[in-house]
Image 1: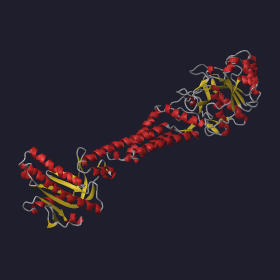
Image 2: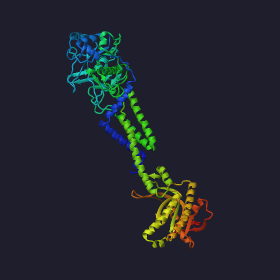
Image 3: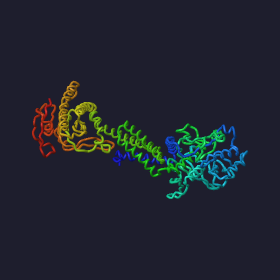
Image 4: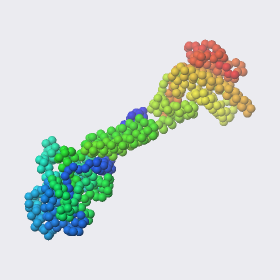
Length: 632
């Protein structure tokens, strides 16, 4: 399991899955909804301003000047004249977005006559809700088909992103003013609202079926999905409709034909009346002002006309399964990116590009009419990469510490650095891989150590021995070898490890380095002896054995202690060659260096080497050719 958790693909997968689960939990808890709605608004408003609505909707708004001239609420007589004047230009439908549950004289009889006449008028009313009681339409229209509710769905952040087609309560069932107006215009073109044949619970206009908005669609979590809702697209921007004042219409200052074959919505354009709503344009992409109620109803009406006439579908979600797959994919790609890229600069650049790509996918999907939440994937992408990177960095620190703990005191800085660069080939499960290599092993030992140790106190002996061993280790490292271990006063060094020498040329270099190291150790020992002699300390001799051959290199031990070493017959031969130096040493000779035929053949022989002969070393059955190298 520990080895599995060090695998880069496994780390990437676990990091991606962890971030995916966290992102899913945050989304289900509604923590992502504010950000998702903000991202939706930013994309929607950019898309909206690209298009000019082709649907024929125009507005008549009561301005502050109109209110000053006619009063507010507009008297019944003013409304009667206004409706009659607009009808004179033959519009397809007229919507009155002004509550008139009680008469506002003068002119009530004139308005009643206008309302009694057959025509294409739609007057608003309000369903009862938590915000207030029901506001009925004019009495002459109550219970008829010439009404439409003005209720609007407002999200938790106070903004309008959805329109309504139908509502019902204990007082009955009704259609929105937008649907009533669009229905009259579409009916003239032979397009009627009906049940969708493929989804009987859906309404269809022309070829477009309207899937009702559900509580968890897109970035919503537990939204109010009451009634029959659809997503508003606000095509054309926050104020794309032509608006005339009441006075302009009554004075005849409106161009002839402005209202012909169009939907005309009458309402207020005066800020003092406070008929306005916050929309996505209220904080991004617009001028920071709320949208007038008649503009909002015009947007919803125009959108329904576009759906019915052009066959464009309303914004709808891709579905929870697709959204989860998209989040998981972004998390997985983030984790895989961290596992694949090692350089932080490159990781940052690719992460930035990926964020742009995820945002572009969400933007493109919305442009095609699909709401694909982007915030959770945009967070999951770098978080998965960051978690995987942190995990891998931790493992690298642990592995580097372990590697340096094994080798830092026994190899050169250059070798240690190269080991780290090649760590994937060298390490497995956080420890050096066991492998068979060809190496030259050097054993050195002090000649006559026992009598010397008896003549020194323990502290003196340790100081003296540490000085000697430190000098010998420094020489080994300087010649590219690794100090395998100290065995009492003996030194075991290996040339060709831990970075394996795989070619004959590399192995030849290792053998030459080992021989040069042995010779340098003898020279350094001579200098040490001179210093010890002057200090009244004992002098020593040295025996060195060299042999080249196959060894098994790897680590021994566990988590508490681990040592890198080489084992095999080659090690045993080198050790016994060192010990055999006792038998070939001449009287008074301080140092001996014995090397096997295998080592000398590898370097092409040494002219000054003296053949000792073929000998059978202790514990060996076959003989080995041994040569003595000069020491002075």
